[in-house]
Amino acid sequence: MTRTPVITASGLDLTFETNDGPVQALRDVNLEIEKGDFVSFIGPSGCGKTTFLRTIAALETPTGGEITVNGMHPEEARKARAYGYVFQAAGLYPWRTIAGNIRLPLEIMGFSKAEQTRRVAEVLELVDLETFGRKFPWQLSGGMQQRASIARSLSFDADILLMDEPFGALDEIVRDHLNEELLKLWARTGKTIGFVTHSIPEAVYLSTKIVVMSPRPGRITDVIESPLPRERPLDIRDSPEFLEIAHRVREGLRAGHAYD
Image (tube, rainbow, N blue to C red; front, side, top):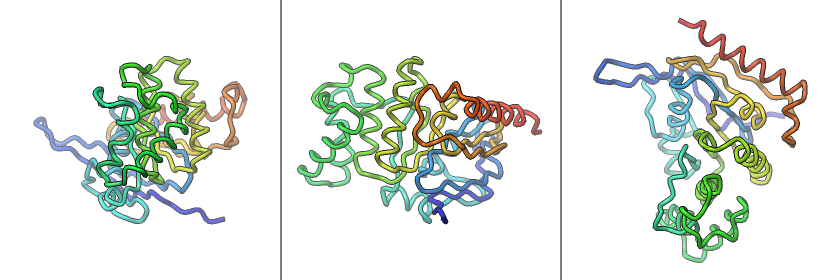
């Protein structure tokens, strides 16, 4: 069965001009992300993982090559509301309730009040926060705030969800729980997800495809198609199949350091 690429990068380069001279963040990145994929990007700090995610979201402009989102230029895809973006920090406004924060993009997009109310209720239930809509961000734990941030990105029902290391600041127990919840959310919604992480176990546990990147300038050293089933209990991390994939990710990271 032919699957549909929703994000395509071809020969992608990105160089930043700085006071100390040009800095090449990405070099010759070639990748296809297909509809319904859960793709994790992993590599050392500064390797261009977040930069690549930001080019998908039209937050950075490539200096070479091409990238398309749903067959469109990323800027056109942004205007078409093709994706939601979850940042490292939850970024919730402290003077707005959780429901009010989730409602904000819907207000900006001009949805009716009735539709805003319906969508807010729907996504609060999706992230298991249906009884917390009237709370303020400071009344919620860090993990709950991140779930609210995910709900906000889901509120306008974009097909693509871009997540920039959303659980990196959380403790391991909370992170494990949110990893489980994110997989359930992905299964229920069928979204295409791009996910930046520094954690090998997180990348292997969550993904259908793992993209391993080299130190700057960021290049892809390996693309690993996961053989793991889509329904994954946490204890799958102790299985030989899981450990084999994790080993291949480590090898890809080591290979990246061999580049000039």
